[in-house]
Amino acid sequence: MAKITAGVATSHIPAIGAALDLGKTQEAYWAPVFRGYEFSRRWMRDAEPDVVILVYNDHATAFSLDIIPTFAIGCAASFTPADEGWGPRPVPVVEGHPELASHIAQSVIQQDFDLTIVNKMDVDHGLTVPLSLLCGQPAAWPCKVIPFAVNVVAYPPPSGNRCYQFGKAIRRAVDSFDEDLNVHIWGTGGMSHQLQGPRAGLINKEFDLRFLDGLKNDPESIARVPHIDYLRHAGSEGIELVMWLVMRGALDAQVREVHRFYHVPASNTAVGHVILENLRSPSPRQARRFLVERPRETITNTTPSTGSPLRPPMRQQHYGFCRTSPRPRWDLKNSYAGRRRGFLRADFLPLCLRCRSVADC
Ligand code: DHB
Ligand code: FE
Picture (cartoon, rainbow, N blue to C red):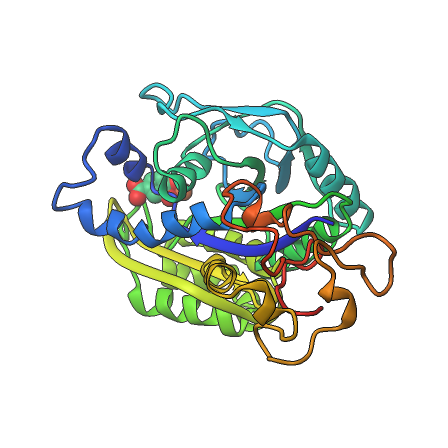
């Protein structure tokens, strides 16, 4: 089954893309920004998502004021980086996952969440800058991406709670997709910023830090923050933060924050970035340390997290069987962390294909 294992939130400032593309990452102004993502690029390489559901807002690139979908999902096989006025960024074409995207559309619409299906669109900095920050400058993006666009550009944007509940619907959709996929969900935009009017340049560090804490520990309360509070405290473009709530809604109630970065300024915004993992998923580092350091003889009788005896099926050499289904559930060679990197050998403990956990589930 497909499984959402982690969520990422990050600002999507277009000037960051320009700094990368023009080789300015070591300049005094930009170096601290890119340092904040060094861990994230390593984490991304280790986590190896098959698919990223990338929640972002289109900045009048694919959608003009003629048509403004509140929520839209990209079901195409590929998405071309848009020309936003200075030519398209020199980044790879974004490969989609039409099967999972179509499944999500069908599932959430049948859960009573309206969603616009988009079969052709270009993608702007809202989507490509986060990819650059987490993946660097590869010849091809390392995973498939499902663009999920939220209207935060024209009034009325969806409420934080609507976004949070939408995330939960996406989670249910992914959980019911019958292919073994390691799925991440990213929320982009924010943090506090205002690009126009007398308050242009507004940054509110206190609001941002409270938001970061609440996002991890008390998302239900954060989801109840009304539009007017974003506007008052985080500036007119601070409303982009509701997109982070789609990401958070798709994760478990309890999550592990593996990375946080906050920096002011970058262009006109406060840069905010967190990586949250579902607790039942081992962090890539945990999994690798465990897998590399402990030979099979030691681990067949204990679970890594609790030390409790493993159930008999897990003693099987290459795979185990789910209690409720006769399908092989444990597969050492094909576990997601080891599949492409080769560090996972057949005589080490597997990750569960269904829950991505190294523990018994
Ligand atoms: C800026 C930030 C944004 O989120 C955006 O979409 C466009 C511009 C800025 O800081 O300049
Ligand atoms: Fe933006």
